[in-house]
Length: 418
Ligand SMILES: CC(=O)N[C@H]1[C@@H](OP(=O)(O)OP(=O)(O)OC[C@H]2O[C@@H](n3ccc(=O)[nH]c3=O)[C@H](O)[C@@H]2O)O[C@H](CO)[C@@H](O)[C@@H]1O
Ligand SMILES: C=C(OP(=O)(O)O)C(=O)O
Image 1 (tube, protein in one colour):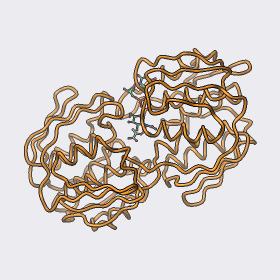
Image 2 (cartoon, helix red, strand yellow; image 1 turned 90 degrees about the vertical axis):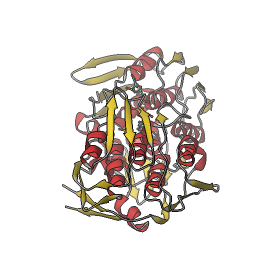
Image 3 (cartoon, helix red, strand yellow; image 1 turned 90 degrees about the horizontal axis):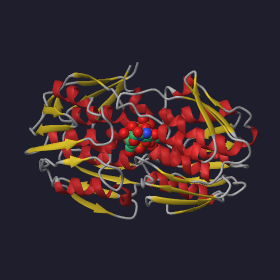
Image 4 (tube, protein in one colour; image 1 turned 45 degrees about the horizontal axis):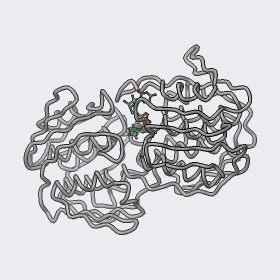
């Protein structure tokens, strides 16, 4: 099994090209099921989750060709409607196939995704919303079995909690439903907006994406599309934090500064000098140690839970003491004990982590437990004397494209070992 070996690297310096967003690419790949002609996507990151999504589409009968960052999908041949356990268990976002299959073909059997390292992650809101649109749904033998006679019906849906994939699933179901659907308390994440833009380019009628009320007027058919996936704001944030903790200078190109306001404002509070252009962000610490910053995660536009682990590391290496409160997932501090093994001064009180900053960390063999926890251990290794070895990096390969090459391009000592 692959591992990453990281050594103390001095200030990072240089440019890194940001890839397409995993969390936008995955729903958009699933949306191809809704089209009645070819869908061609560009800026799709080469990630394990993307490969899994392509396998899932093929398993349904679609023809999928992947060449670099381009994925072409011919959805016309879909004749199977089951997302099997073997695929779903490796990627929770497989649940995003439920809405499109049901809306387009009236049936879907999707293995129930299990709990995972960061929390239980139920899908009750996805199921309730689809039921409100007229679907019959049973959970049997570990599968969500959904059926509808004819088209789904437009409905008014109030989501009890803000759910990103829940909003996306219901949005993809609503675009082919009969009549108007209103999704209230919808997620406002930029990836929801990217999906909505792609659906609109396919012929869907959607208003309000990016606000908490999305209105959809269902249409009878959607056509294929050529669509470019938005830049990955979490990958961008991860490289900026790596620049900040190493007191370096990092420019992210092909990025989307508008999707990162909460993160950039916390980096500025930490003492970073930030400059943005239309599609680039430059961070310069001018050789200074960052200052500790307190954070509370919450749905967009507030601070993203997917950047929480990386900011834990920033605080471990900052001047002062700060608290980080995780409000989205009940078990998303799995990186804390690993960082403590590297000498970090941290303690947990319920959903809050209290962190006292210091100048450096010590190396250790550490284990990645989930995607962003893994990223946090890699950046921690950049400020630890000796070899830090991060095990179980298949989590990282789910969400970061060529991570070791990108870090090497910034002067970091990060290498993949078998
Ligand atoms: C593929 C993708 O886009 N993944 C992102 C998505 O995950 P995902 O869409 O799975 O996360 P949600 O926004 O749904 O989860 C938010 C909260 O709602 C709860 N919940 C959700 C659905 C439901 O039916 N019932 C329920 O109780 C969850 O347990 C969690 O506590 O948003 C998360 C929150 O920004 C990010 O960390 C993930 O990177
Ligand atoms: C939790 C994440 O992803 P997923 O929802 O795909 O598990 C993430 O991207 O940090």
